[in-house]
Image (cartoon, rainbow, N blue to C red; front, top):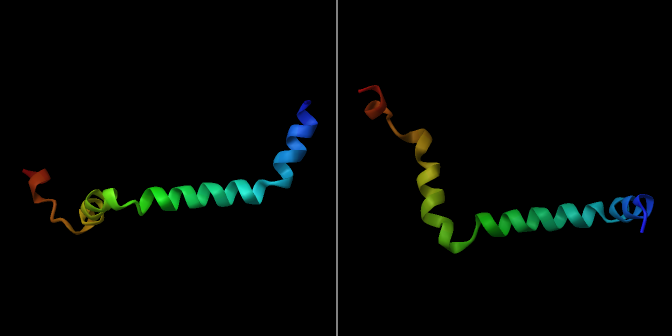
Length: 54
């Protein structure tokens, strides 16, 4: 299999590859075990930050 055939295959199915990548990221983000860490990260901009200033 040469480079041209591989490139042609990837060109044909680029939408499928991107969709699979997107769905994989969505599954990773919304996995039930990640809820606590995502909520903690979402509160970071709302924190006062005085503990950093000393």
